[in-house]
Image (cartoon, one colour):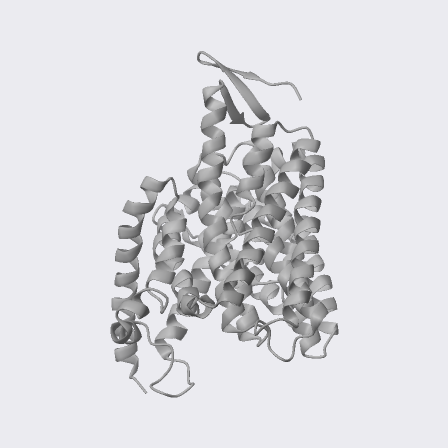
Length: 448
């Protein structure tokens, strides 16, 4: 067993190597029209057994050990990477929620609701059929999973959209204050909520405990009601509240206010994790109900670099260590991977795009929304890790879905940017109220 000092020293080396790899990949990926988060995601797989482990297996195992020697005991450094990654996820989702434009969502609530329904129902159906079929054809699920449970798991895996990943792409693409960006995030929130409920149902039923799914639904709804109608009013006082005899600040932020916000975020993450929804949703809701103003703006400015470029990459490394691409190099597994990829991409793109068009969005805007919905990266990896930890899926299915995650997420940004360039060549931009025409220096709103 390594000492605490040895674990800490090695962890510093791991973090430094992670950051160097992310930066080197970013130089390559930005020339391919990708955002930084995609480079960070791929870095996890490069440093795992799929790439580095295939080229330098001994070096990879020494740099990122997963077990203690030949035992099945989890290595302390892997635990450290996991915990740091979870902290990064929680605070990144808080920042996403703090940047969420509720006013734009309110103006397009009907369109977002209908599009979300299509973006969930069609992938759920297609993924469910594929998952049900996979249970009896190949080594994809463990023996504790029956047909309908495999169907629910695959339904959630196909229907999910990586909310944090999508938020990063939307931010870097300049879509944060547009109808396209806000509706895409809204649909992703609904998609992910449905996916987690399905996943909780599968995990609960494999343990012969259906009360777990009921607890997840009721606990999640209670949390949402409390945060929106109670906590939001309390937190609104932060912008005008002055603690008695306490003027201490750190980095330009009042310590008392900062402490309250951190406590709220951590408690929200703990509660949603406890009821089975997952901590990132609690953190997002905490950010969404925070009062807008100078205080929240300064917190976002201080936290974003630390969270996005130091803490969050640890999660992708943890996921990459569980992926082994060599497992799919069999004809039947490759065919299954192609089927999963086709169903995942086409189901999302067509369902979301056609529903958005039906709700009055232009063809370009609808197609861009369908492309963005395929950014599954972060949340898909979370789902896979839960499925693997709970003993639901095998390494083959984990690797198939991880590969699908990389490809669909990798394709989302270039397809969207291709559509955006085509729109701009025709004098159009995606604005706060939809597609708008550019007339010289003026933006003319397109009627809907």
